[in-house]
Amino acid sequence: MVATYAAALAVLVASLAIGQGALALCGLRGWSWLSSAVGLALVCAICWGAANLPGEGWTAAALVLALAVASVLLLWRRREERGPVRAGLAVALPAAAFASLPFLVEGHFGILGTGFNPDMSQHLLATDRLAVGAGSQLEVQGYPLGPHAVVAALNDALGIGLAQAFNGLTMAVAILAPLAALAAFRGQPLVRRSAVALLVGLPYLVASYYAQGSFKETMQAFFLLAFVLSLREAAGNPQWRDMPLRFVPAALIAVGSVYAYSFPGLLWLGGALVIWLLLERRLALKPLLLGLAIFLIAVLPELGRMIDFQRFETFDPSGPGLGNLFGQLSPFEALGIWPSGDFRVAPGDGAVPTVVYYLGAAFGSVLLLYGLAECWRRRELTIVAGFAAAAGLYLAARAGGTPYTAAKALEVGAPLVVLAILLPITSVSWRAMRHMGAKVAIGAAYWVAAVGCSVLAFANAPVGPTDYSPALTALRPLISADSALVLAPDRLLDEEQGERYLVWELRGGRVCVERESEADAAPPPGVRFVLTTDSATQSPFPGFALRRRAAPYLLWERAGAVRGQSPCPLIAVRQARQGP
Image 1 (cartoon, rainbow, N blue to C red):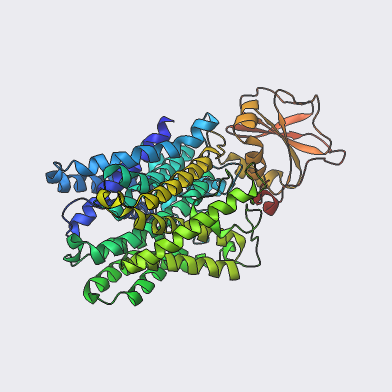
Image 2: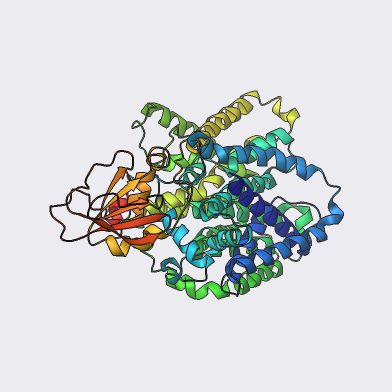
């Protein structure tokens, strides 16, 4: 627990300090909550840039610390501003409570999402290699490793375990996103502003992807939201309009998107920018070109890796298109009202009747249409452009991609959908609201329903083993040609999604999993290898000798010929990815 919250706090403080320092260098006077996105983007880029320098994680941590300290010194003269602190705490504390729900409900901290999505195993392995200066399959394939580099820096500099560091980073994003959403509701009363920013930053689909440990998708949704809001500030905020570098914050957020999501991230951001430029009639070209130049310089080192990444298996329409899904997601989930703890389940397959889903979808759809019309009438062109880009990419993924990519497109655009619903309803004064009783009641009903669905998604998140070791992955080539039996502790199986974790780690061969406390006197027929925890002092079965120590596991091998046909199931890679 302490390690998870320490990692989250480190990312939060560094992002806010560095982001606000960067905004100050751009010429901004006063606080902006978009510093949360600018700072995280810079932290990802800096850590990945330092990953190949001597010292790896230590060097990255030292650079981030130096920039954070320099930013604090630069901003020290503004310490008399207390308004941002109150507004920030009013959002950050409930966001942290939401992000803590999975661990509170499960009763322990561990690998987030195990049981929903096994992909975290690959990210942990790649980060383990990155932390020691070694290569990995993901790195060779051009996979974006900015977040992994942040985790490696936390691991090296603070001694935080990889699983806890990833949890901390994912939790920090869940807090930073609602903070960035505060920029959309500037000038509104504290309670109202905090409530709507919390929902915009953590709508149902973002909460659902958080629940399965999908940190990249939650980061991309955050960066898209912040990018659109930074364009909005540059176009309409008087404090920004006079800044020659007013588009640099958006450029820096785009840089973070590249280092966290590679070139696909630019499809959303670039699409929103292009549509906005087509809609916007008054535009200063020079500031825009300055921002574009800074973006190109910052992402140039990643260009070759982006080219390599376009061959990644996820982009193959004929590949394993479901991933861990059961089928196509309903686009109505992006509206935020979807009363299911598992976003993959179709309406009616859970405890809630089907009609409730479609009543919520109809309610949200009406509010979205009204919100978009009001945004257009009020010349909120950046929000219209961002929504149009997200909707277009979803339709393209639905028509020409796979259910897996279409689901990601829905999740990334979800905060903008909720923003388009809430902004027109809430951007009126209290005096005006007294004469709009019906509209206020409708908006409050939507907020309550949508927040309840987000809380349900957070509370349903599975939490896996408390620690991660690459030992099982390293043993996989040795045992994949034969059958293996894993004798696992009861706690790992009962409380930590252990069976799914173990079979995923050992995928590619035949694997049986049994409890240590209930192991039979002899292993199943056809089993050549037995894995136990390293607390064992002797062979678990007669005729087995120690083959390899791989802390925290021991691998035992049967001496002589293996007789009988193994009953252990074959754990194929695609079968394991599809989940339950």
